[in-house]
Length: 416
Image (cartoon, rainbow, N blue to C red):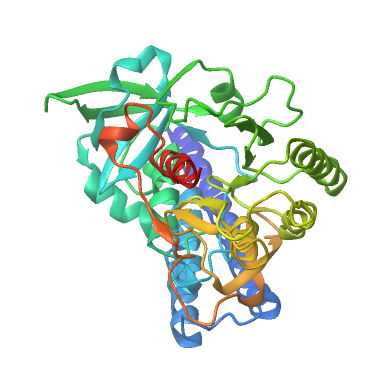
């Protein structure tokens, strides 16, 4: 009996020592986080006061014994968002890029406050198009509010919609916020078109496992525009329609400088040979990169003589147009006299940009921060505002209608 008590005491002491050591490592990480952000950020206290930031840091360190590792991470996400999330500093964040996370095999999009299923594992395809009602019997409105306070890369209400829909599906975040008790699976409840609630158990998967799952997706497009089979890049390609008088460029991501140069040459040669008159540059769903590569494309386009530069150039934007793509949208409006069509961008034209990064020494948690202050407009605005404001309505989107592109194609037809 005595030996049993000694064993229990040893186990207790070992756990206590391990927890103390873990807490000390987190304290060192949090101090490093504080010190390094102050040193590297161009202006850390542009939104939050130094006193408030230091109070948040001290409160977190005092609460370490009560928190799991991932609860500490979500606390750091929340504190970091206070530096400027939603106020023009989305590049200062805790993005979780280097963490082994699990997510549920579903994609949500915010339509007027309703989170709709626009992509889901084929095994659950009956829920495609449904509205999310709850997770683990907790109303989605409550969950959305909790997650929205810690999502990284939020600069305004438009990026907040996009980012929250993404981070609300990370199993570890839901568990850290006490939404779920099991990180492996949980219950999702949806409401269908008839108003009927139905529930299912969704499993959470690693990113590698998610890539191997077959999905059902709502596809929205225009019948005149399809990606050529011989296009080299998935996220950068061009096609033509209207007897080659209209050239459509899809730029969802930036390749290398050499690849962008070669692509731009091909577009230039095509326009010149076919004497194309109308130009559409689609920057929707482009999360950014290097805006100088976009300028490289514009330099080739600007040399095309057949384009009607007075009224026939369009740039498409939405809430998922970020960072370099947002900058290019403004530049294309200035350099190519383009009309901006769609939703306001998720990134702000005036604010803190140009991302740097560092890792915390013990947890290796990645922290990003803003290095520059951009002023790309004379007036401040939440997102780059389009010249023609169009946002997708659910009734059209669910039927595959691309309202933004449809408007542009119709406008071009009216010009002919």
